[in-house]
Picture 1 (cartoon, one colour):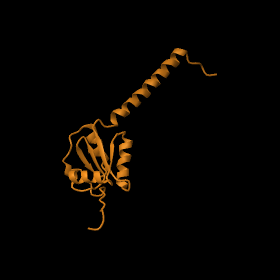
Picture 2: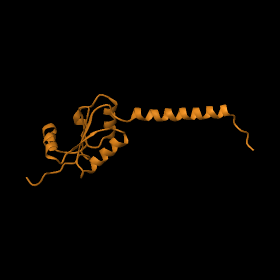
Picture 3: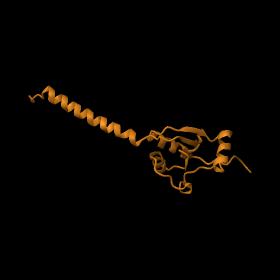
Picture 4: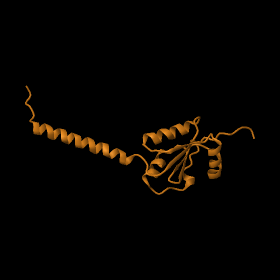
Length: 133
C-alpha cells in the first residue's frame, strides 16, 4: 500500500496547481483581443473575408461587421477607399487590406502603423464587379 500524503501536503499541492493554472489562463487574454475599435468590411461570398473573420475570432478581437454588399456600405467604401474591394479592416483608424494576421495583431498591440501602401496584399483582396460597364 502506498504511503498516504498528509492533508497539509495535499492542500499545498492543490494550491500550487491552481496557482499555475491561473497564471497560464491570465496570460492568454493579455495577448488576445484589441483595445481599439475594429471595423471589418466584408461580403458573405468572399473566402478571404471568412479567413479574416476566423483570424479575429481566434484572437478574440471584437469587431463591427459592415456588409459590403449593401448600397450604404458600398457608398461609404467608395468615398473612403475609391472602390469596394474586400476584405478591409480598420483598426483604430489604420487600414489593413486583405488577409494579414501579423498586421492585425501588430495594430491591436498598439505598435506604430506602417504606411498604408505596405498593407496591401495582391493575392487576398477580392474585387467583384457590379456588372457590365
